[in-house]
Image (cartoon, rainbow, N blue to C red):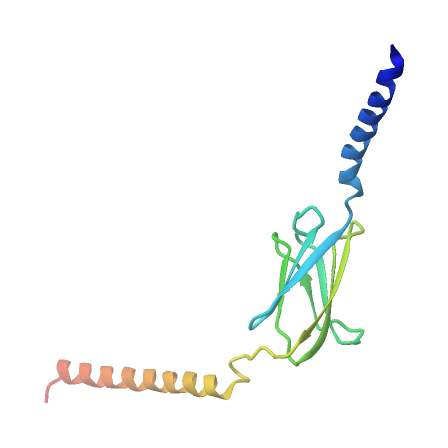
Amino acid sequence: MWKPWWPLLLLSCLNLVLVFASSPLAHGVRGRFYHGPFLGLEAAYSDGTPMSYARTKVFYDQEKIPFQTGVTDRNGRFLFAPDRPGRYRVIVEDGEGHRLEMELTSQKTAQSPAKNPRNFLILSGQALLGLILIFVFFKALKRLLHPS
């Protein structure tokens, strides 16, 4: 009577062990980049859980000193603005042994308003126009309050 049930019992026990052991064994990580005016990285564990608040370092090409450091947000995202085109290496570590390392080649650099002459001229023109309008307003107010 025990003989037909023995293989079924063994397979059931093996199945339970594999189901409960799969969670602790899932130490993989994955990531993907986003391209735009800034470069973004999304880091997650292999089960899809975000690598929240994980230490992040961005290196330019083969440099030893990081270009930028920080932590991912609660959704496992991290943004950085490259200052020159080239290859960037990003390392994300959660402090519990999980590590994600990715490389990205950027063709563009992020433009700040101070580096972009067109934006600087537009902002300067707006500031000058604002000062002129304030001067004209107070001049007209003075004429209304003190007619000659």
